[in-house]
Image (cartoon, rainbow, N blue to C red; front, side, top):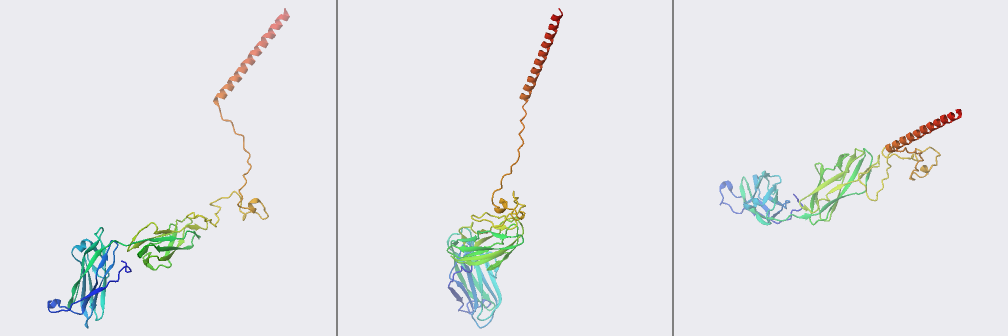
Length: 369
């Protein structure tokens, strides 16, 4: 509950002035005084705290003192008892007990009221406060409760856009800036830092640690607050370290800007988790991840004055490679045609041979005649 949002309310002290009208077991004691505010507010986010104070204004100790706060009548249907500080809380009442209050001392109970969902706005009823000690009682006090709309605020988180360069095993520091652009304060609950490939998250300037998270009790309108956390890089291929937050005590108008993440570049590989406009990584990629067509200037032999050594950024010349002639693709129709042509040629040769042989025999016969 937001203590900073609690208004300074003028209270009225109810002190029993008469005696004799009550039974002996409930005799009045003018030293027992209860102070309550004139009214209290409640909304779905919690509203203000109801401060109830019990004082010993007498000259003797007060023993077995009990203070009771109860939601009376129809109020319990519109408002619920959210918390009761150090007291014992039930559904509609809270009981605060102490063994002894010395003269001039007192106790204060912080009662947190929260409007139920969709409760009508406006007057909702009264809270009833009673108190008694072993020697007497105080008069009953009532506090009117009003249901109001919750306050709205606008708190955003921003992170550095430039990458953080880390070697595997190194620890990086990441700073988030929170800004309240809304009209009312807000309580910031920042979660545990996360990120795949990171270990050992820790806060370095958290105002108030809240378990694994961090708490900013009240960020005033127009104010900013920086919070830094550290994480160790444990992987050559990490995700982005990040942190998220929620706002208590007020409705945050925009929740999409409550998350902050940080780009990281791994020194060994030159790989970055995000490409930032205008950013040029200074780390060189390793040969294992990005093979080069030419030897680097560092690996070149001494005295070598090749173009690659003079200017390693020049594009490599394509190598002249002899290309074997391509084989024609197989065509079955052409093969059949070729066989046919050779067969015809063979038949013509046989026919010519036969004609020559016939002509030679015919000529010999004519000579013998």
